[in-house]
Amino acid sequence: MGASLSQSVCVKITGKGQVTIPSAMRKKHGLLPQREVEFVDQPDGVLVVKASKLSRGKRVLAALLRGGKVKGDTESWLRLTRGAA
Image 1 (cartoon, rainbow, N blue to C red):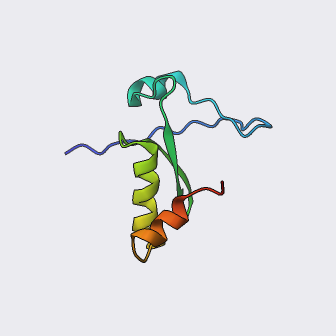
Image 2: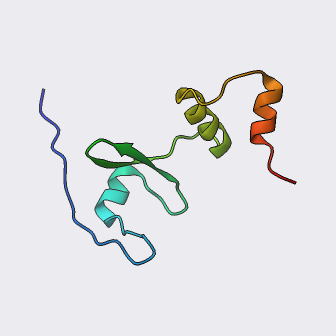
């Protein structure tokens, strides 16, 4: 089996915290306009990945559940997720 080589490209962060993903990488990984990406905190940096096809709400819920931050019954969960009205 051949080893997969990673390509590294250096880009600058703007004053607004924006970066431009090089065109070749966008095409290779299917990062189309309006597509969401996720930033995953890693011990040695940040990993940028194409967001899953789950809705944003379902991704947030899954992340909370994975982190063990949601405990209790349904009413507790509903109180947590309701915004201040």
